[in-house]
Image (cartoon, rainbow, N blue to C red; front, side, top):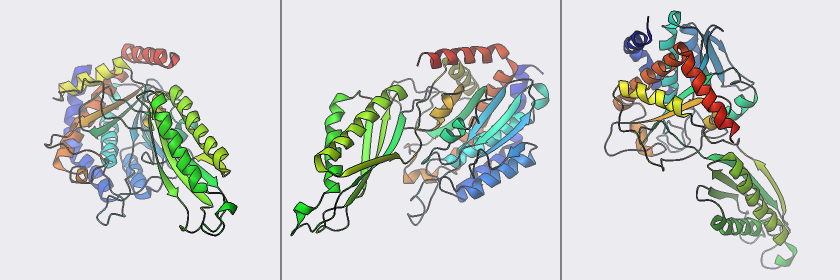
Length: 402
């Protein structure tokens, strides 16, 4: 069967199985779990992959809710689809419950769907189909741990899609460091003996002031934002301990490291000015920026156009956040794509209103397109070795230029 006929058959298989993929979307949505404790979601997906004949490893890389499911042979490319299934805190009906306000239920269903459709066509190509379950994208970012454990060392190319406000094959993400700063002072009565105290909250406030002064002297892509998580216990006690957390972001990891050191220096200056003892740590994993491969993007765009996805974002300022899929893109060519819901007015991820659409007919329509386009793009890589070589050569040039 030639490539074009394989693609047409992939469309047919996806249509035949689509109700099952809707059920995956629905189950994950109705069983929201926070990052790192996605026990129901991860087991549900693993059980499904076992049913479809995939060999599974669960837990994976010493992470309770990570998994790897694979099917195929060693005679061709190993292509991975990256699943996510953690929910956001505080979006549930009672405001203190998790809910899928970022659509990771949809990511889980779309990546599973692409793997299953490809498995039904496996007799027509050589290689391995892999689904990797990656917990806690919204918080800890376990793709960092998986990368460091070698989970992507054998991967020739990786895929993931995300619901966003526009159709975009040239997605950006900011590299990010997550640092918690703790200042330890000395408690004293704020009125009768303030001179005997060392004010840890003063150190935090001075650190914020230093960072605000720093903003003028960093590049425009930098984002620094923080909160105070401990500001003291009572107004009539000189704060003995004060803690703040910062996200520090930049377009490139290399420049981010410079900025992060400057933020740390602001904390050290606050320590010197107040006498409060400083300690700091990464409270979440570091995220890297996404490396985009133009030939990979062009292939995905062509397959999206074949199923009617148009109006791609062509500007220079798309919505930008940070994601640990950037860490994956540092070790293998990664096609991260954003697709837009067909709704008006637009509703954005991480908004309460998005919950109406994360498990809706509109999201199912998009799920259908996501599975088809990831499947057909993967088929091109399995069947056209020259294309895969081109993508990998371009990728190595980009990595080497960093």
